[in-house]
Figure 1 (tube, rainbow, N blue to C red):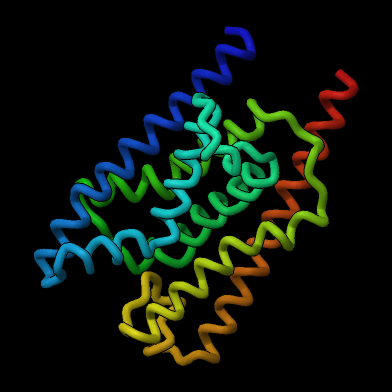
Figure 2: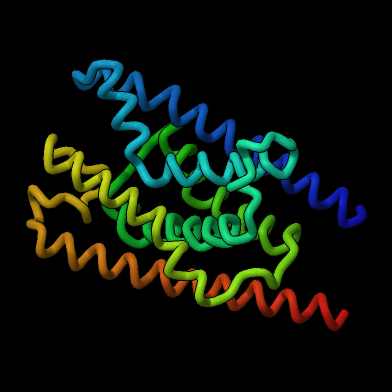
Amino acid sequence: MNQSMLNRALTWTGLVLGLVALGLQFSISIPAYMANGMGLPEALVQFFSFFTILTNIAITLIYLSALADSSWLNWFRAPKTRAMMTGVMLLVMIFYHVLLRPIWQPEGLFLVCDYLLHYAAPILFALWWGVTQKHGTIDYADAPVMLVPPLIYLAYVMARGALTNAYPYPTLNAFELGYGQVALNVVMVALGLSILYLITIGIDRALARRLATS
């Protein structure tokens, strides 16, 4: 298999994985929310308030942007966006494995979705980014800019939580933990994400040097 065929195979695999995992998660989550008393609009808001869902949508659109020429996908083609999502997806995997998995015991299709969205998708995307992308166009100075989308998400979640007392993750639950502890949690996660960005950028530069000398 030549490089072009490998790139296309990885891209299609990622796209199909994203569509299947997100579609399955949606199909089981919305009825579960509604069975617990939520109306459809509230259930939809709840579903799309999870960082895991939004980030998996983002990487699915990145795969799509590699296969389609539509101009509305241009942001997803940017090297900085793709490197940012590599760091973000690694955070999704680590955060779930270290903090959420010990307190969340899904079964059946919920367990399947958890493994697809929190393990398979991040690992495949990191592999896809490393193997298929041109490297060497981002720099360490880009790391602060990469923090902006996660911070926008955080601002939304905290504002929604202040109004509804509903938080997607226990570490952000200011109603139970207080804003001081939540602020500390946020700083720790932001620091961890920054480190992952720096590692990602370092790998990007190393891959660029390797390709330049090969």
